[in-house]
Image (cartoon, rainbow, N blue to C red; front, side, top):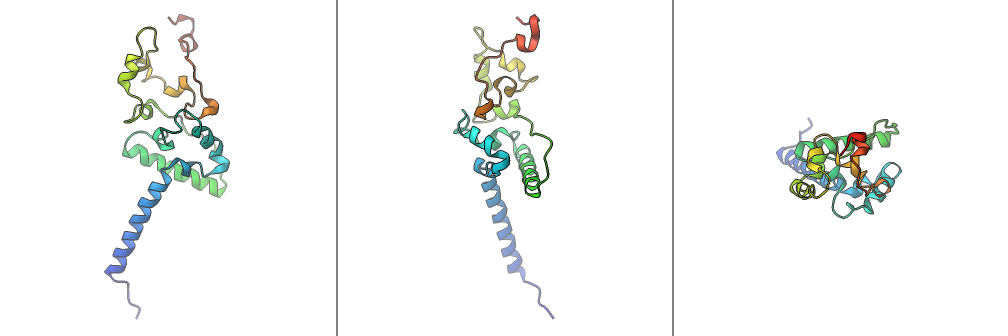
Length: 163
C-alpha cells in the first residue's frame, strides 16, 4: 500500500508555489519582460527606452488602469498575449492606448498642475480629460517613433467654430 505524502510535503509545496507566484509576478512586471517578445514588442520596447517616459515609467504604469484590479487585468491580458505569441496565433486586436487615469496615477502627472497650465492661453486639460485621452493630443508619448511633441490647435477637433 502506497503512503500518501504528509502535511510537511504539502506545506512545503504550498510555500514553493507561493514563492514561484510572487517571483513570476515581480519578474513579469518589469518592462524588460514586456520587451522579451522581440518579434512582437521589440520595436515598441526600443522606442519606449528613448522616449520621455523611458526612465520614469514602466510599461504597466501606462498600460494598466490604476489599482489592483487594473494591474491584474493587464497581467492576465499580457499572459494571453504571450500564450498567443508562443502558439503562433495571429492577434487581430491592438491594445487600447493608455487612458487619462494612467497618466494621473500617483507618481505621474498631477491634475492640479494641469489646471495651473490652463491660464494665459494654455490648453484646458482638465476640461477635456473626460472626453479625450492624453494620447489623442500627445501621440503615443511613451514610444518615440510616434511621439507628437506639439500643441494641437482647437480647430483640429472643433473645426472652424473653435475659439
